[in-house]
Image (tube, rainbow, N blue to C red; front, side, top):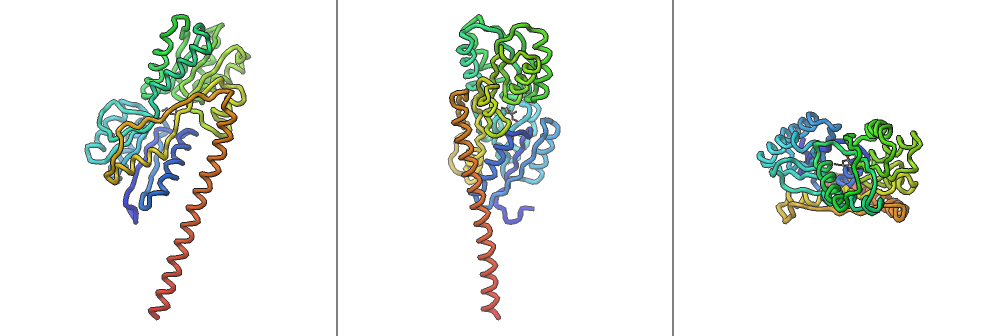
Length: 325
Ligand code: FRU
């Protein structure tokens, strides 16, 4: 039901976790600034078949634009090509597809993120040491690109060895499991680098359970603020460092709206990264708390405005009725 909406935007998220919850909030908040826009969000629980269905449903509903974080680059490509060829603009966020048929991309450059991680490792280990890598879902582009970037940075020294590498599919529990086995098989590990914070925290928890956490540095990616997430873990001295992987939901909406209104937009929109370590984690926490408070006020204001408009139109109706009678 299109109702009074001028544009309907379908958002297809591959998963649902703190990072995506944050992005969805930003998308919905930014949408408040565009009257007549309705946003429908679906999440596929890391399941290709489910995401393909979600996107098919959006095509069937003839949404005006699809925003999508594709679970795996190969599997999700055909259905997005179908949407694109049917004339529905496709905005990729954070993950890419093995296809050129998309309208725009918004997100970090994952190769660059990986490279920054690699450079950090070279510095932290003074060019020598034994490293374990925990990767995200192997067929997703951030996993591929972060690995490539990190390996390129590690080429600078031949004394850093990746002694084990395992796929934990972006999940904390899975990371705990694979790290359990790896710790048992390797007496010396200097650093565990995980491709996101959830997995890095899983690795840390398992190392602590085996009383090995003090001899190992832990690296993650995402830097989500808030209770129980990456930045807090760094502030507590569990993770050594995390790298900001910007959610950028506001930027995503801006690009989507420019496309819909026929305005100028960039096809590739890169959001930047930075390291969060013990030196700046607290500052980041304080600042994000402040931002969250302001975000909340924006939502409050919006609800008040809605109330005023409702009351205003009710009064107008009443006045009109009086005049007619
Ligand atoms: C969130 C997430 C992040 C990771 C990103 C990669 O769903 O798993 O933790 O950085 O996806 O696409």
